[in-house]
Image (cartoon, rainbow, N blue to C red):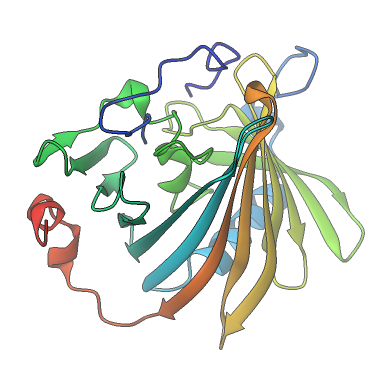
Length: 263
């Protein structure tokens, strides 16, 4: 666990060439321990994993908007390839970040290709929680491929349509947050809102996932939004423009060599 209130407006964010960073209870009350997790909560988290991470491969294209109070919106676009626990992302626009690529092999093994330097660099673990190319989504958030590996859970409420799960980081896990409050559409066990909390119990970010569409049994939100409460509620919205499920993605895509190809 590495999130804290210190990762706020003054935290270090940057590498180069426009490359910015890479990637609980409110009020300071005691965080619940793993011993307080219940079987129903853990089963619910496993069900969310089954719904969210069901596909063997996925390909996405997104148009993004970074919105900062009192500043002009910033636009970007990117492509994302996913296979198992691996992820490969490439920025398509704007020109100052085009060609920047990120390879995630695990939460602790990530690499970036920066066109300005024409080099592949490993992303240091202490910057994986920072803004991903200026976005409010961080690399360690985007690298999660299983909630149940990182968190135990308790069901906070369940009205038959909506379930709320309080998730607490497992000891020695690579969970990016100490606690997550997840709201789930119960019919399909799809998350619609995630509130992220630091080690000290500070509510630092809120993510929403809306307008799900499905291809057979596979479902994905058409819009993702992350609000960073430590940065005057700066937000990033990603709107899905393309999506392919279980099409062939070669293993060679998820290599350091692939980061340099076509550059």
